[in-house]
Image 1: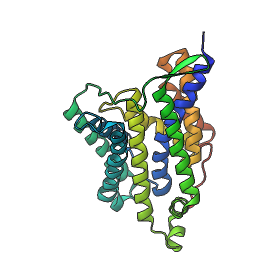
Image 2 (image 1 turned 180 degrees about the vertical axis):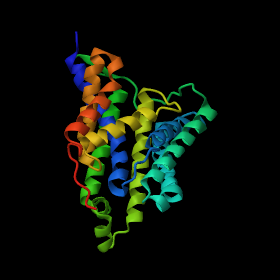
Image 3 (image 1 turned 45 degrees about the vertical axis):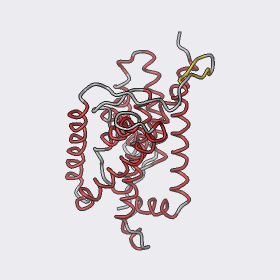
Length: 287
């Protein structure tokens, strides 16, 4: 018999994590118009940074793992943007190729260094909690709560700070933002750093209840693409809604057959492209 409460809780939890994964992806595309195919590799980097900081190399505890999962991917994203993307960001094909090469290079580095054996990352909090007659890992509930804290902080920053308003203005029109003194390159760097940090935290969260391996970023990258298209490319709010659509559909179909879970995002993606190509909250480009 299907446990409705378990399905509902699982949907809410996994969707929050998907939102965290997708928002960084859509931030970079919405502001810089760049399709960053290294986003999945940044998730992998965050997971392994947490692994190395929690016993893989040094024993820095959960706090050290969280710090490493934020700082290392954020610095990595800044280096990728300043070192490779900034000078060619107006050439979308070159950007896609370069970020794909970066993604493959990161995977190969971890494949050579760690092999194919999955690596365990400690849970953020051990134990179980009873909800609606079912037991859930406390770690999953912590992941859900922290995901929403981060998402809420990001929404507040974008809508209520000067930097956030500069990001919004640049996402609408680079020329218009430049006319009021906003430096688009600086804003793009901010978005890459924020997206890198979000991806790193997502890698830590995923690794804490699954495991870390060299190819763990591929699935989230595909999900991110489906989520941002469904929600509307460049829309943070759309990515949030899209994440809940994909997450809920995955959990429900997974209850029928786990073989269907990978197919659902693709079917929903095709449906949205046919019926509403701009996505649920998409807008026409200003330029």
